[in-house]
Length: 496
Ligand SMILES: O=P(O)(O)OC[C@H]1O[C@H](OP(=O)(O)OP(=O)(O)O)[C@H](O)[C@@H]1O
Ligand SMILES: NC(=O)CC[C@H](N)C(=O)O
Image 1 (spheres, rainbow, N blue to C red):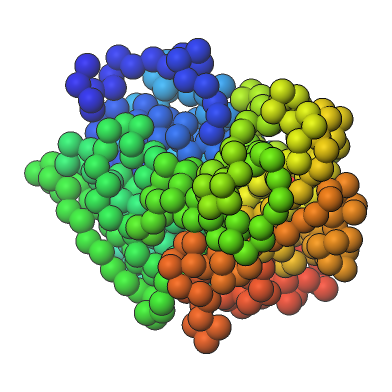
Image 2: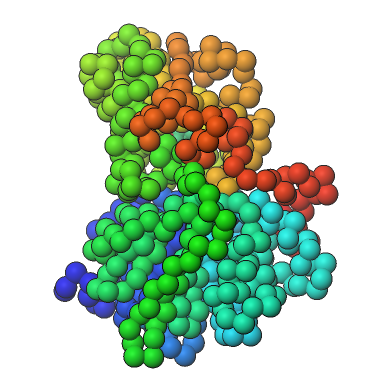
């Protein structure tokens, strides 16, 4: 089988374990488009574990498969892939930020428009989605989902422009917030990134066929070449021409602004083997650990990562401090990411199932626990108790990112301020007491900026999106400002 011949390819869960937020993938002009999309989504599984969907186009018709659960639970089945014929496809792995966890919100979303069908898949969140939704409903639109993404379809349908591309651009110009989007029509694959590039999106190439996906790890899995990042504010349109060739046109409809990628991609979301905006995620995480060791030293016998997210930072911490690194916590790889689970109850249970203490490396020792972040404190609370139960003499926590005080509205599910641990206690000492740790310290914002971009934060023009740490939101928050009108968007049982 050549590297790009996937026609006879079948998945087996035994071959590839699922150990890896929303992820998007799109490919144009490849005979195995759906299989490649499924493989790409598999590599992007860490970006969303609630549901996955693929839409393909076979030259005549669009085909859709949407399922709740993991990519591997459904798209390993050749019968499912056989229902997705055609040489163009887009896909999505979902972790909900607007709209409930239900099949009707699983992406890609599809609509029949004047010019033909269009499917869209979106990573991110619109900060004016609810406001626009109310406006279009007031003028007669019938919404089929509670997803913020659906608003884009309505705006495309209502646009007065004649070509699909111009309609798409007209629609996204009205949207505010964070987005990395792929869209597919009968002949086109379109990619778009928000004006400051909060969410990541890259372009690849497989045998001359264009691909767009959230992270480079999805290109690696199918042997595709990385071409470039989709730039902030850029829309790239790839189109199959009558002679079979593919044209590629890049447009910049938004007012030019400096790029401000989301720091949390580096801290937590992206896979360590991905390269986000030209930076290796692994290297930035290790740098965070090195800077943390220099800023927040600790007397300890062993540095223990909270796996998986804390591992590269713990390696950096151990390297810079000279304290030996050991796997003092063993992770059960059959439990996914707990932070992005939809309810607190599942998160707490997930953390318990996921980690166990490796007594041999902990007993009688002063343990320096390194994690990438503390959000709600669910993980730290459980892990400190577990380490103590395994006989640790002291437990010190070092966190490779600053304290999180503010919710995110751009695609990360941290909506309530009062649920963030940093807002519940006056300082690190009080937080440490609650968690049961002997000490607790966080990386400074400049330490994080230097780890990722080499320079401290420029307060006049911050190089990254960092509102969860600083409260500096890079866009208007229209829906939030209008919150008093209520957030209920559906009368259907169990829906938002
Ligand atoms: O304070 P909390 O609310 O517990 O959230 C923070 C924790 O959640 C994440 O881990 P997660 O289990 O999601 O993912 P990982 O396996 O990639 O580390 C992160 O790495 C922290 O450990
Ligand atoms: N995490 C995301 O990117 C979510 C995408 C979209 N807002 C949804 O809820 O489906």
